[in-house]
Length: 255
Image (cartoon, rainbow, N blue to C red; front, side):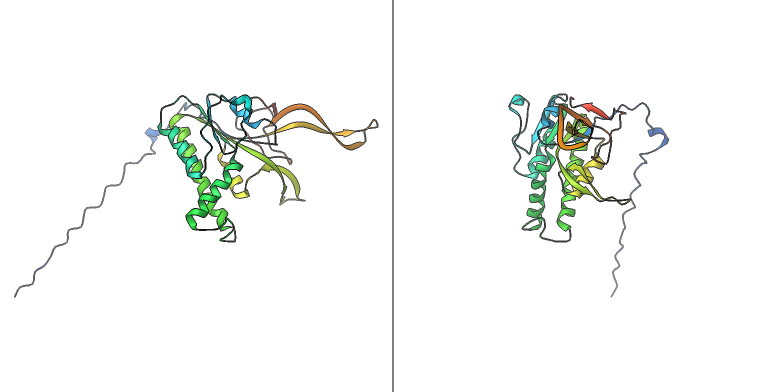
């Protein structure tokens, strides 16, 4: 009786992929990428009208608030789910069109769709159901999916991205002193942080207003509005803003 032996042949190890980042891959004189803009503004300041002035815009309107004067501006049907928002972005990425700017109006109205998507996937009754902030942490993953999709669109189709947001007055927890109130995007703090970090240009729009004073110069409780709509490009204690283009600290709200 003989013992049969079986020889096991192991596949040869795969060759490592060629290195992509080499001295030969160094780039120079690379043109600027299209902007990623977050415009946060107070109610009625004209965020949508401002974005409509961008080059060849297409709107994804989570908020049903397009002014009548902008009736001819192209837009997708109002999305009913977060997945439909991703579908719209994918269609712009893969399809042929002449649009140069995509506008999401507004991200705070989009946020409930993000929460619904998370709850549906996890079988939660609400975003608060898992407790300890776990629902909002899961929502952050969905926001990252959105930002990755927008980056893909920006890279492949060279489209500018504008995210609009309503402003809310919230308490800023100041680690170096007393807390104070400031304007922030009307988003959950985790989502707001992601969007702020992702964008290249973070703008704050507001009607120009001042505190009043009597004839002696003593401050009064009456406010004075100049009627101007302005956009701020630099951070202050009252609002968050940034830009990478050396813009003046204040500009008229005009794209």
